[in-house]
Every structure is written in C-alpha cells, then in structure tokens.
Amino acid sequence: MTDGYPISLINGLRIQGDSIPDTKASRILSALLLKPNEVLDGESLIEAGWYDDRVAGGTEKIRGNRPRMLKYLANAGVESCELKARGGGSYELQIDPGQIDVFDILDRVERAAELQVDGSVVAAARELERIVPLFRSDIKSLGTIKPPADSIWADSVAEVAHLRVRCLQDYFLCVFEETDCELENLLRALSVTD
Image (cartoon, rainbow, N blue to C red):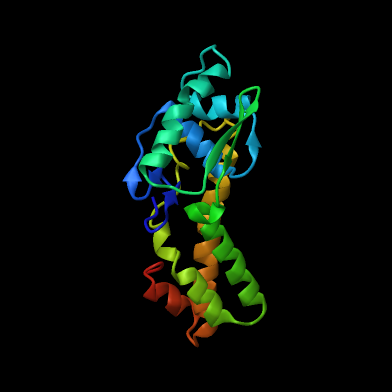
C-alpha cells in the first residue's frame, strides 16, 4: 500500500490512510477505482466481487453492495466523487484519478520518460525519486482484488506490476547516466551483485 495518497490501491485498499477490509463491496469499489470515469459492465464487476465465490444471482448483487461502497468513500471524506448506476448492473465512479496512487505513479513515470528523452536526466530521476520508495515489495493485488490467473482483472495487476519494474529500471538508469561510475560499481553499491 502506498501512503500519502487519498486512495491507495497497491497491495490493498486504503482510503485516507484507513485500510478497507476485503469484502464484496470493497472488491467492486477497487474495480471501479481502477477504471475511474469509465462505465464498467455488470459482468466485470461480478468478476471482481465474486471471483472466489462464483454463485448465481446476477448483477442485482452489485446494487446490494452500493450503499457500503458509498459509505467507504463518505466515511473517509473523499470528496468530488459520484457513483452512478448505468443500467444492467453497470456502474461508473466519477472521481479525479489524481487522488489514486496508481494513476499518479503512472503520470510520474511518463513525465520522467519524457524528461529523459529530452536529456533532462536529473529532472527525470527527481520525478521518479518520490515514487521509488512506494515499490518496496512486489505488487500482488490492486485494492482488495486478488484475481486468479484466468480473471479479467489479472491483466490490471500485471500492468501495475510492470509499472513497478519500469519505474525502478528508469530511476536507476537515470542515476547511472548522471554518474561517472561503471555499471558494475553501481550495482555493487546498490548491493545487487557481490
């Protein structure tokens, strides 16, 4: 989980610093947070909420979890968001993606890549420096969704896990480009090699 963001999805769901328990409602909310301002169909939301317990019941189960999702956001004081029903079990969470750790991190990695291409290696490293500590461990889940490999949500977890690798690689590449040391010495200093 990443601190310092109103909403954190990396390795658990935290809203305003409070851990949200693993419930059907928190899984559905996690899915909606992964796709802010997009309409998600009922089947995708069912897959997120009930991936470990595929029982019949259809999309009306989502509606039953709506009050709890709203309560999570309201109790944490998240402002400027709205959960809209779009029919057929589809929902849209209208929210500023900048409040969500995954999207701010993605923006920073993209800005750093642009700076690096422009030759501003130090500025790129500084952009990444703020988020490198957030990636202390591997990314195994997004919010409270811990999907099996065949889940439609497994790709989202894989994309963010790749973002972690890219961030770390880009950061250390910037450091390496800005120093006069040899790669072997840099890796030794970082305790990557013996």
